Image 1 (cartoon, rainbow, N blue to C red):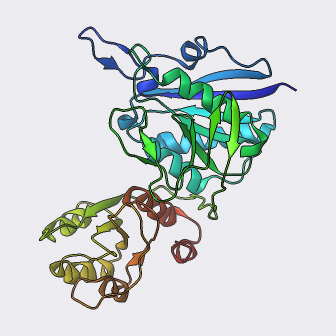
Image 2 (tube, helix red, strand yellow; image 1 turned 90 degrees about the vertical axis):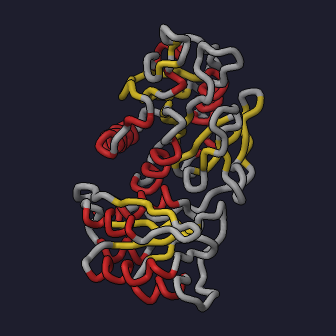
Length: 322
């Protein structure tokens, strides 16, 4: 049985060419350029559409909203077994999680991939990753598992994927959670399934949410700067179990009183947030002020959740489910 896959290319390192000064110029190759280098299994047919030709640091939330609508349109056609998105690695985890957080259940699988090394470089992972992603997208085993990232022959949930290396081919991992499976010899092996949250459907323009990182003796002034320059929400990347310097508490209280939504996560690679401690600036202080504690997500992912919650039809319910 022929499996139809559609490849949506957005640019990134996987679409790079060599520049005149021997660096990598991102987003130059099209999806057809990449597919032409693969020897696809006979049961897989791939269609290609180039959506963007950008390095991923240049993508916007308007781009992601457009991509979301494109994915929904493809799913509603019921013609494809899977969708593969090629993407730059700098913001791959942001885009994958954004789609995870706001897409309804699809009629096909959705796989995001990219590469750490450009296609023209020796030892490139571009074609291995793309082939693995296409094979994964054609597998019935990966249906209804949400947005998946395939990288270095491993399968990850968009919920916990993080970039862990800036240049080696093992660029992504899910610290503390592990991969969902792997691809070997064009076969998909699934070893665990992710727990999926109810999607938050955006109905309004996405509001700006900033991330502010707590660290030893960090100044609270950055909180004021964020709100005064237009942020409608702030994610605090706390220390330990979601703590902040004591000097932050009065300003957080003032921001919440002024209508700024504030959430807190741990800056650690993993760990839940519970009000275990009793000292000024502890998580309990923040919770008493109305700060939203978000466990098991990085600050970048919590930012996306908060942006979507602020744009949803039932804002308060979205906050409760965070």
